[in-house]
Image (cartoon, rainbow, N blue to C red; front, side):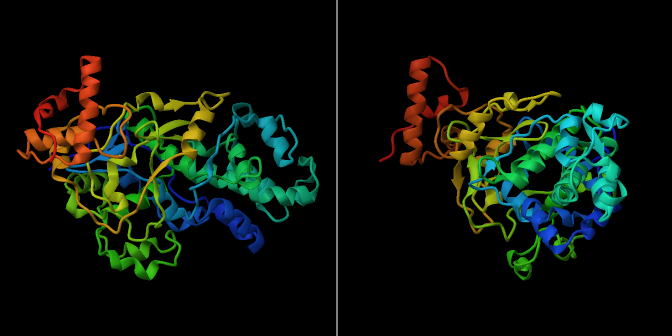
Length: 458
């Protein structure tokens, strides 16, 4: 029997704060509508009971360099479309949010609060939920704490939903240890409500980037607190590991997917405890999981940048790469050997007073992203991929290739491992590019040498 590696127990958000829920319930229907336009279904996370054991077990399977969970014979990773699936937040044809460091003084000024020197937390650029709730959570907070405000009651009323968004994002989506809410989140909330140059931006890439960042830091032992949205990650995992017929979710097609989560999971027998979850995950095979969510949006999905084989996401605390080409089956497509790049230099943490590096370049690539159609699925991996995965090939692909598949490696495995000499015209065209590269450089990837003797296709 397998056992969980001996690592420090990672802490995380373990419940929806009562004050946050009370605050939400105190809003009028109009105010709730304004918030859901910016946060989608995130305010309904109070319906999800946290399971710290599944997160702790998942961390052990995380591969920070490839940005995937590596299981027995397959890889999985959260994708943008699955964040959309749960949150109902749009991301396509919308720009990524660029966060800004926010001093306590600027934070207070924007929310219409006086610069209170007694609050030492602002010196370290954080605020507590208790403080935000007292100032904005009650319907009569303005009257109770009139002397604390530098704004009119009308201005206070306008800022109430924004303060709630800061509180929810800082407590559940981008949490810090001990309930500290980063004042930087105010720059995100402000953009969600006000836009930039008349354009609405999306928080979806930031949510995914911070989940990846949290997984990497915990796996490398750099943090004992999970600073991503563990509730979304928990639901994501359970949806994939509870295998069911594609038609089973039709009755939930018009229902919020957070609201209906436990209805979909009612026949799922949950492992209990970290050891049981680890054992369960360690023995899952690719034919025992739910590859594609049955009700994924049908619009083409973001799959890679034009100039690289991955996508750079702008997070709250850093940049993070995202490589959905490695999990095509989650899009209802057959998995091929993916094009691979060195992504180590694309994971960058921001400092205290930061500017997002290469922001214009990242946004330009995001605006010209390549997409893939979401298939009906489920689809299987090609035989060459199975060999490639089991042999643990780790080399990167040649630069400048088109599409999603490393055709050179596919040809080599087909020829040298599977004993097949069938080469399609598309494969041969890529092989000619590889041969030219080898001729010009005098070197090249060792895994394509065996295929140079293949005859061209008829």
